[in-house]
Length: 507
Image 1 (tube, helix red, strand yellow):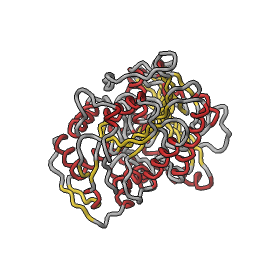
Image 2 (cartoon, one colour; image 1 turned 90 degrees about the horizontal axis):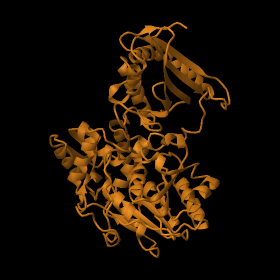
Image 3 (cartoon, one colour; image 1 turned 180 degrees about the horizontal axis):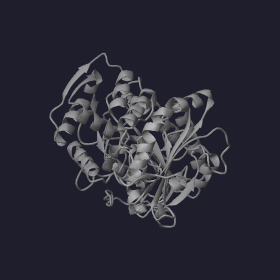
Image 4 (cartoon, one colour; image 1 turned 90 degrees about the vertical axis):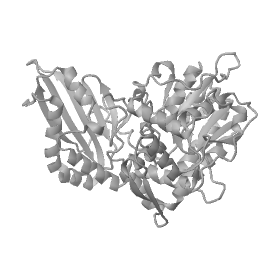
């Protein structure tokens, strides 16, 4: 159980004297999922807006919140979600959208602010990013700053918290720092890694988010939030190595490494996909230092004070080691991968469908087989043909996909809706069904499904299906191109799930 970190802060009250009614958008995201936990600990009445309510079934707070199912781009869904709300947390972003993400972020903010005003929302709290004082902002940082401006001009008093590099188990910034430092004892880096950065622990971000709820309603402005120290990114890497028990890294800055080259390299070495890496790298080209600490006049430090960088890194590494990572950056849905029905669903529109079916009988009990099924991927791998999966993941990285490096949050248990390498866990029905939806770059849609059942012979039947719905001519060509590889990876994977006693099943 993750320890609550903000319990000494006051709670905002509604007009009736009860704890305020709060809406959290982005509740399946890295910070949003943890924010819900903190709000509940303060006895707030919490409502969340999510695109698919079923994806929340494994969240520990699911039964303690009101769930509104809908998309933040849908006016009707927003009206329902914001009705009767005192305080709204705006945690929406389009970082993983590759095209026109700035325009999408502006449209989201304008719609949200307008509907919040119509519904009488008294306060919006928005988590943005620290902006450079110069005018040469990256599109990512420019969009975040513009979002804050739009919300503050909506007529609803808005507190915009601008954070820099957030340090915590599962954050994209921390995963990038961790994997670069762990995997590269010697590295050539861009010269702007000498720029100053003020990292902040995720626990302090949560404290400011909760504390902002009770700031006087007349306050309508932005605040920079940062930890107690300022470093260069190079210094952060060396301190990480020290805390992690690694040798001091040899870092050689070169002026010839452009943001494009750097983000491509980060996409290959770390779990962070190229699209997200580009935005993170672009923000590091400028100094990421808080302009002031005025927020501390409104939200006091915890009794222990602000979390220093070494402690934040140590806490994050401990969470990872103890398999206690509550949320991850990859929990948020990858855009464009959630709207299509499974080809065997009644509402599927039809079309071509390729299926690779493998079935094996096992002497093991269904529960024992299920443990192997649910532990698929990540460090556990997929089959004896591990090299083939790694090659496919590398190919996906080269074309801007997520690749295999996202791994998994926990080596033994999955949560519906979370990322697993280049899959998204679409459905779990323990110990009977696991369905994964592909988020790799494909000319079509793909699923990988495992079913575990009791056969009439008394043995356990393991059914593995790979389904592929091609789009266009190249979609069909792609299937036939990879078909020989399927003959290598799919049989060994199904046998691995069935276990040592596996025998091929002939229906």
